[in-house]
Length: 501
Image: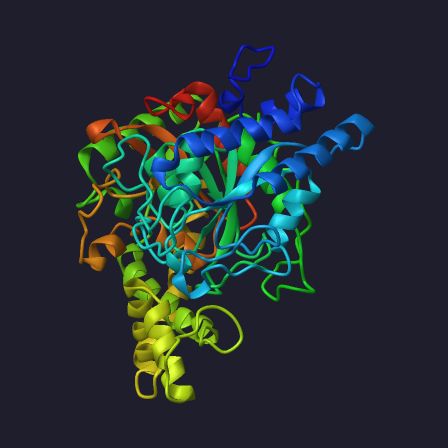
């Protein structure tokens, strides 16, 4: 096992520690890459990775070592990371967890991937996700993970009989099980925050438009946003600094907001910080074990000098019906391009063009994707557009206004990420509504386009992790990361690991 001068194994080092160790030549980028590749192969049973390419990874690591030797190292030079399989990559297949894109190799890298590469990161591989990022449990992937002959759900390393959360389940598991020091994820309705909570790691969704969506296989264009997942807020700040920045030539939803050093404010005082506590996040349906962990984290903030302020987000309950009208509507439009004509899966036997479309889409898409396409097509159809889609957009604006009213009396909003800890594999079986309801606390911030993150806050039933959700106003990522960092200086939940990893 590779160790450093700190006597820690390489997989016990965070991004910041790895970056320092690499610059100080305590170990090489090649050694780090080989170490994490070996761990990825040793823990294939978790189903986290869907693609590895040792030759490509080691070539990138050798190039990183050369830049370090030449004194031209970037901020993340030689640090190994892995990408959710929703980002297209030149050197690895990009499938979005779907049979529709089985074996697809992109001719270009997503902007987020190329920005992290420019900062020096070395790509370990691609990570499992719910098909087209549609799901809350990572049980909807149609791609066989590395070491498997058939599609399999991703397993939570804290209890392999439980789900890791979704859709960025493979990403969360890779960090929690020390198969990668950091990863990329995407958050449409909570898909960074919820798996981060369920796996006991840190994850942040920045303000919508902060990170380019170019090369991110689209689910719901007005909601999808890329973000980093790692063990600590300090590590997430380093990654987010590299990922963000305008991309107007390739992404029309990219904001003209310059890249920022999110690490600069990490040790600011909590004295006088007003933390809003929404009454709607602490009502019926919140499991007692989750509430206890969240309450304990809030008490830590009070010890650090923060003030808890009661607030209201009155339309919280409406976020579920609003999201599950808007997101499927956009999905039905985005996924219409997968028709077997230009790329992706094509049915073998068909009689004419229309028959090819029908058979290709019937074979290529999984049940959850079909469900959302049908809902989306219905709410956008003539006679229903005004009744459903238009009304949902109006309520979405009201939800955003609720947040702005709340921020008049607080600086940050805090609450649970999910109503319960991770549930058992198969528990929600054929009840997609149960999955949808689990997103109640993450959906409002997504609909408003606000930054939000999950911070490890303790443990609940069955020894499973519980995350604290922090939500900030637009462009307040640095404030969120500082609040998370200060909590992590006062607690050790982010340092704890599942047994055997």
